[in-house]
Amino acid sequence: MSRIILVRHGESKWDQESRYIGWNDVPLLSNREDLRHIGNILLNQRADIDLIITSVLERSIVSAWTIMNNMYHSWITEIHDWRLNPRHYGVVQGLTYQETLLKYPNIDDITLSWDKMVDPVGLDNKQHPRHDRRYAHVSPDKLPAVESFKDVYTRVEEFILDTLMPALSKNHNILIVAHQDSIASILKYFKNLSVEEVVKIDIVLSQAIVLDYEYNTGKVVQSILE
Amino acid sequence: MAYTLVLVRHGESVWNQLDKFTGWTDVELSANGIQEAKSAGVALSQNGFEFDVAYTSMLDRAIDTLQYALEGAHMTWIPVIKNWHLNERHYGGLQGKDKTDAVEEFGEYQVKVWRRAFSIRPPLLSEYDPRYPASDDRYEDVPPDKLPIGESLKDTLDRVAPYWESELKPAILSGKKLIIVAHGNSLRALIKFLDNISDDKIIDLEIPTGNPLVYSLEESTLKVLKKYYLLESPTQDKVSIFNKIKNFFKIK
Image (cartoon, rainbow over all chains, first blue to last red; front, side, top):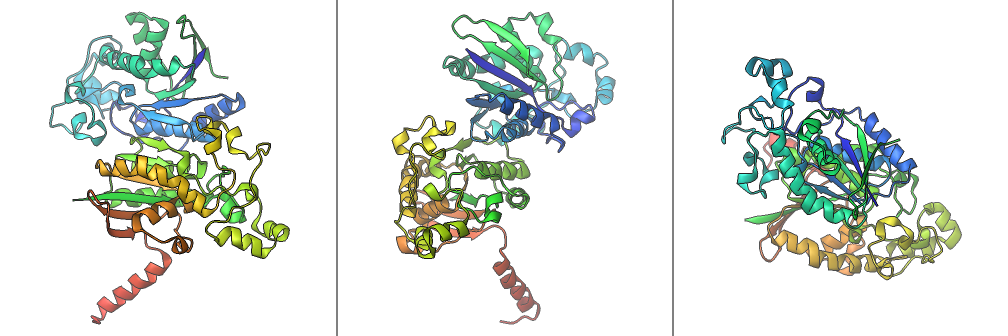
């Protein structure tokens, strides 16, 4: 049996301002009590975590570090994988919800759909990941200029198969700190959720979800962290 | 083209203030140590440093220093590799002891020998000691006979050497830009290899905490072309003030 603990990152300034953050690297705010609390729970449980996996964005990485430091387990092996990034929100990245409504009156319909998306950013736009060193090792045709939920799921599934499954096959316990859509994608994979179900999942900031997983049978039990 | 390598000694820990033998004991950074680490990160980013990978030890104070520095520099995304070979010198039975208490127990001369001699070991730990490293979860993947139970400075250098040869050096030679955050004695080892410092000189080398030591290395040979501390130390401050005054009065 292995345990996957899924945590959504803590609050950034743009979360407060209701902006579409996407792949922008917006730092975490300094009030990290909720994350420290998760660390304390894991410490009290004497949780035996073997591996920590985050996206390549600061708000998820620093959230993971905050949890680890609070459970005195900074030394655990960590991996930062771009495939756990949030959805790339194309031309609306950086805009507030109100500003976005002017451009896309149907934005809610787009964000809550499986395969709709806003317009992509241009190749020369600074918001295109090809201008960012952290994606230098990723094949250019894989780097998105915008994404639908389905696109996020496709890359997360690839991550599950080549990175997560090998660790789970060794009965390892894994802490994953990521983003709304990448976490929802993991839930879809393990709980076999339909497309209609997965787009409705709402994970609040610093929320922790526990999946107990039996590798041999594929059996999954979800619970909350307490 | 030259390769750049940055070494950072962890910020001040709460035991530095208490003057205790720390070694492999996991001790948190002091408030001052956290500030040192953040400032190091900000200075690195303001001076245009970029990294491809970070290496650190398995000990909290080094990992925390790295994390605060990377957050300060907004470079948290780089891969982070934590390895026990970069740990501090293992101080065996002295770990956790107050330095004054150690003098009382073993005598001033003996304590001085342990601290200053190159190849004298401190009292070794038994496997029943709670400080025995093989009982610590974090080292469960390391064969117990490889884990130290008390090291001389020579032992520490001999332990860092294979990691330098098999991991760090090949990474630098492949063109990667490394930041290494470690401890007084594991960094002494790296500096000894880089600068070819003799055994008797290395013990006198003091490395300031939280001040990035920047190396510029010749490609393929890794010969040191240039080496400097990024932040001004108090003594360097005096020199630079002197230079400013000198320039002001145009003294040649």
